[in-house]
Image (cartoon, rainbow, N blue to C red; front, side):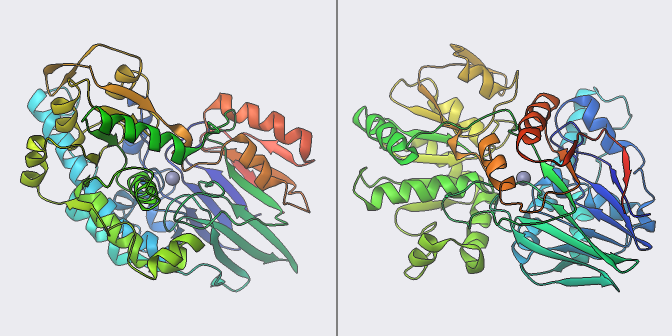
Length: 462
Ligand SMILES: [Zn+2]
């Protein structure tokens, strides 16, 4: 019997990896790292639930580390098959996986200095060099091209609208003369977002594995450009600067795009815009080179020059250039990583500019409980950065409408296109509260059986 086992992203939002056994083939859909609390991260160190050398292939939905970051470890433990992904995902992985390896090495070195690891010495989950090994196994498959894995078993990528290169997977197999479609949404993006194409819809699938991150939330419905325009103009009037902590891939490029839109329409003065993150800078050139992924407006802009690098956008590569920005006193916009203030150059910008009431800090991503970002958002008057006390006098703003995930209304909108309801819908990639809420809403609109699988739970198919 064909079977599907949930090796991660089950009642949690990280560690996406689903194990499929179909017609004698053993496949892994996504191969993500667990992130977040210590208990979840421990799972990265457990033996992989399936012997890696027994797998035939991995099929990735997109490059985010919670969907791809376990790959170096999978290879270290014996996997040698092809790793399928879209062409843009392959390019992004060539930046993101080595960076993840570098961070693993830094974490281990830090744990050894502070002696807080239970392991002595603490070792990285994988190194930068091991992460580079993965790149040899990547096999790019373009959207809308049916790729045969074996006789009667194939898959196809569809646009997911989440980040550059993101895809949904339509997997089909024939068994006893009947054709079955298994569909994976991966991370589902939003409609009418800048730069990349909207998520595609489908009219039928027998089994659907669907994300549920915002199953219980609706994103702010605001005029994003108007909000940003007011924020920038007010900051410039007080001769301050706007600091945007953003993740290097996805959110940073969106932020640049919006600023350029406002500038072009004359709604804000022309200001220097610094993109200060080596990975974000490299990701910009990948964004500019994948024309096939762009929506109509972006395509038109690209006919002149890539709007993400043109005009007043200055790409900051070296650490010295980054530090030199501390002396820059004219009003400007600084976009820097990491988006959740977990590390990176954003920290020295905040250390330098948080104490000045003329500046504005705009959060565009989720700030986890107890994190530095959350403390600032909650109105703390003083925070510690790199062990130094910094007072918070800058204006603090928050815009979650830039999220790259569909909210509950958009998830239901996507499902409403299914003319033939799947027999089962498996909800993954969500916290339990979000999943329960989405299950309730789905049960009202579709007769499918809605499952919320547990970690390592297995289901058999027809
Ligand atoms: Zn993602």
